[in-house]
Amino acid sequence: MQETPDTTVEPLFCGQLELSEPTCMMHHIRPIKCVAFEGTLTGRRFYGCPVQQSEGVNCGVTEWVDKPWHPILQNCLSRLWDMYHEQNCGRVVDKQKYEKHSTKLKTENDKLCIEYTKLVQDVSKMFDWQDGRVGHMDNQKAVEEEEFEKKKKEVEESARLEVQMEKLKLAKEQRCILQSQADIIKNTRKAKKEVEQERDLLKIEKAKLEHVVNELLSDGHASKEKLEKIKAILDS
Image (cartoon, rainbow, N blue to C red; front, side):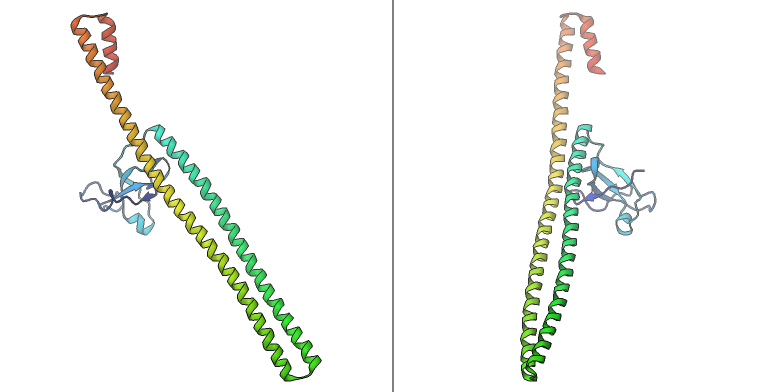
């Protein structure tokens, strides 16, 4: 039994199967309607067990609704998924770089705050030693603390803006991924429709050729032995 592939939401094919058959071999319950979204199986409809979605159990595909795609279509799907994974790997690398850069910025910010605090304390001590006045010391300390808080807020605001920009970038990339998924489904259906149209055209042409051969045989035209061979090829 083939393991259940990843699925995607398809409003036209969803919900639980109303009939009692087929049922899951492991849980013996009515399956749900699913649409595959993985590799060369993308777009194929099947019946799957609902338990595996809630408990993480993979009981396999209960029954396929669609037959395997044409080899040409499977090759196209494989190439599209390869392209998607290549782009996705690039996004993962960019995210790791961003997280590493954010950690570095936070470390530098903490170090800067510690150094600035030490500098404020040293300056305060210097003024205390020079002036020897408590009032002046308190005033200077208040000024230094105000400057420190101002600097700290500027650093925090800068870091917040950077984080916000990265979140917007990640949200945009997520929208691109969702759009790519929609394009894959659309292109899959389009390719399937073109294959079906070509198959119907071949059937029509075959029927026309059979009709011409039958007319030639009935009228006694050309070589009857050659026409019989052509007809045998068409019937095979």
